[in-house]
Image (cartoon, rainbow, N blue to C red; front, side, top):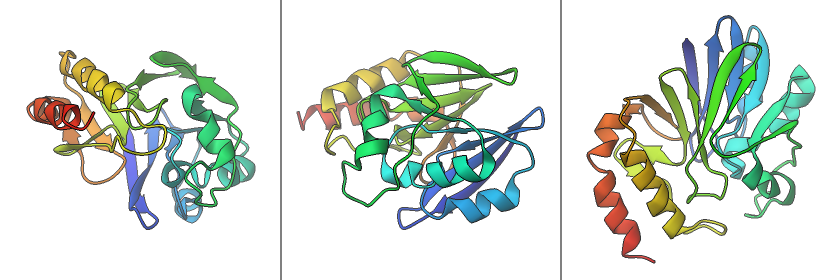
Amino acid sequence: MQIQMQAMGPYQTNCYIVTVEGKDFIIDPGVGAVKWVMEHITNPVAILNTHGHFDHVWSNAELQEKLNIPLYTPKDDLFMLTNDPLGQGTPPSSPDHLVNGDETIEIQNVQITFRHFPGHTPGCSIIEIGDVWFSGDFLFERSIGRWDFPASSGQDMINSLQKAMKIEENYTIYPGHGMSTTLKDEQKIIPYWIEQVRRTI
């Protein structure tokens, strides 16, 4: 697996190009991502969204049109792609495939799992490819995603963090913002964040 990363837009949202067996998967193409993606892809096969916030989906539609490849989005976040709930002027996009929570899909013989960890958004998911997690805005290095946005849920975030604590395997984590980490390292601090969230709900 080859992973290319570039932080995009005012929120420095990480866009990834993940190459598996010669196939390029574009994860979370945010604000201004099109030029970088077009310069760094060889064989694009799909666009994948971890969740529906504007800074992760801004360039969905333009890349769909330019590359003629399908878009996969968690179904519970579809409304964010069509209704611009945060009022950012996000270009609307239409997923070709709506992914259920904790669903494993196969794209050109590559298995990809959308692990559902709601809280930041209703459909918030980690995209798992092999032993790597693209965690969107669920887990960061020593931090977690916000749970105070419209459509966020503190209780869902607690449940998701508790779910993450039960996973025994280790994964390398590439988050939606910031630097990479590992699940084992984050499990050391997740109990702290559970208590922080609990105090706010």
